Image 1: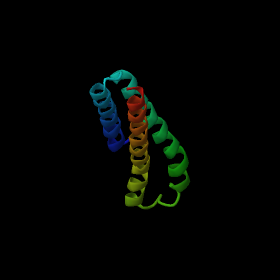
Image 2: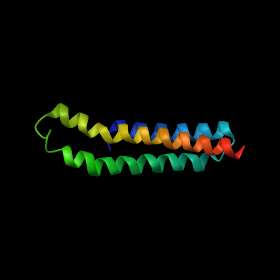
Image 3: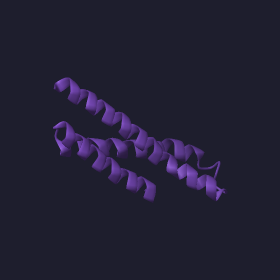
Amino acid sequence: MLHLARFAAIAVLVWFYMTAKEKGESPINWAITGLIGYWITWWAVKLTVVSALSGMVAKNPTGTFLLIQIPALCAIGAAFLIRKKLLADAAEKN
């Protein structure tokens, strides 16, 4: 993983933990759920999209750099959707 992906994973972990604490839910469960969702999405996009497009930008350093960032951006989007679902579930429970 690149630095953006590592930083984003830590940010997701903290974000989910703090949100769960605010909502009175289990912070550890939320943090682990968010991190696993981030990680699975990152790997899925890396193994599909990046692998498929890597040949197109192999000789362009800027294109390669941007292509490598796509999994982290998709994983951040997935984390946002996972958090939204967890918040909806917590609201229904209360």
